[in-house]
Image (cartoon, rainbow, N blue to C red):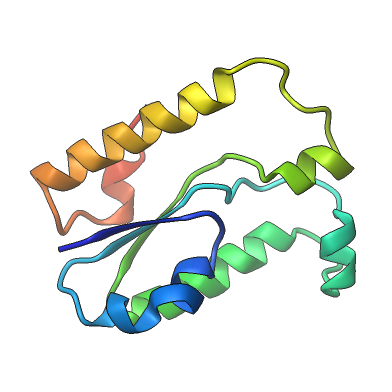
Amino acid sequence: MDIYFSPHPDDAVLSCGGRLISTDQSLVVNVFAGNYDGLTEWDKLCGFENNPMSQRRREDKEILRFLGVNVINLDFLDVAVYNDLRSKPRDESVKTRITKKIENIIEKFKEKPGAEEKEFFDIE
């Protein structure tokens, strides 16, 4: 059983898809997978017309399920979203929240390695 922390949806599959399918009860956690309104410059260059993260999350979940891997998408926003669409947080609260969320996921995974995505929704 392994847990993989991925910056964005599809990064784990593209980086280590072979490893993902060779391990029982794997879990991928996409950290910067929060939905947002609008399009970043990168989204436009990639041809997205609306709601790009929903599409990326759906595609990632589809292929991970095909590989037999569970996935959790956290709701943190990538720096590109802040650069193009929002003002950046000015304190350490985002880093602290990410760290706490990851620590809680690791603890939950230790308790129940084969947990489904819905079992992680109550993690704060």
